[in-house]
Image (cartoon, rainbow, N blue to C red; front, side):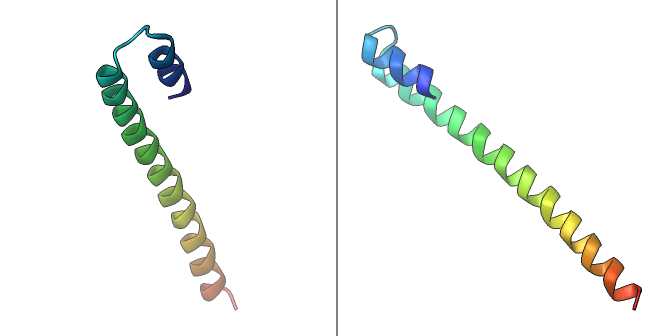
Length: 55
């Protein structure tokens, strides 16, 4: 996103195109973050369930 911002500031790409690219990059970032959080949550749940089963 930083590169897109710099290209917009330098006039290498149109602001409207840069805004669209940044939006898509933001959506990809959020999808990645969600996947990482879901994976960590699943690990925590498995860990908690293992502790409940083993007294």
